[in-house]
Image 1: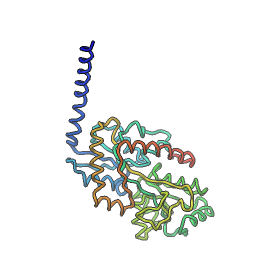
Image 2: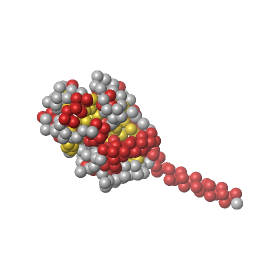
Image 3: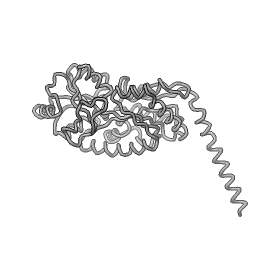
Length: 324
């Protein structure tokens, strides 16, 4: 009997090494061709900026090609990655929208936000910045609420797409303040910004990396940040929560791979992302943009995503927001 057990154990060990061998060899040789990093929004926003930092600083050999695939609140690009080969050569720069909000906002999703992806690394968080056109008379959150209540639906707020944190921040604001305004979704941030400067829309809860430089140039007016605490990048700007208790909306960015991507490859990519975002010049770049780096393990990202899905499902339900 012991002979048979030893033989079975030996066979099991041999098979495990045979199965593990190709995976380990695959990870050791990775990457042997260019890596595609899909950004689910047009160029110019925070996801695109982060993706291009990875592309510029990538040190594993080969190149990282940034591929912008915008549309449907980020669903088009995320779905492309979900259906790609799980070999580490197609990745997505995920956002709070594509991987925690959209599942509650869209009645039909082309992908499952959890089951169809392998978590790789959380990269950074960012406040959204409540900005208004310079002709809006309100100079702070209290004045804005008063103006909106006196002029229901007179103001409209833009976003780079349905389901983005920029959109849902506005819905949360409406819900908590009892105000009314019209949501105007655009195909990307670069289309919305000229309209808020020109007055076609009056306000926006934009990602800080794109909104803060314009506010500092005087093209638009910054009213408040959407995080629970003030941003270290702009400590002079108050939070919405200082006027509206309980208001909090954080934008986050992370890299995911298709489901069933070998763990060794995910860890290798994670290690390279950790190296890149610890570089002094990259850290300084993030600070000037209002992005706060937070590099996680794959397991930490999975846990964080699960909590965010629960949080935003409640926000979407309470606000009544739906993908038009």
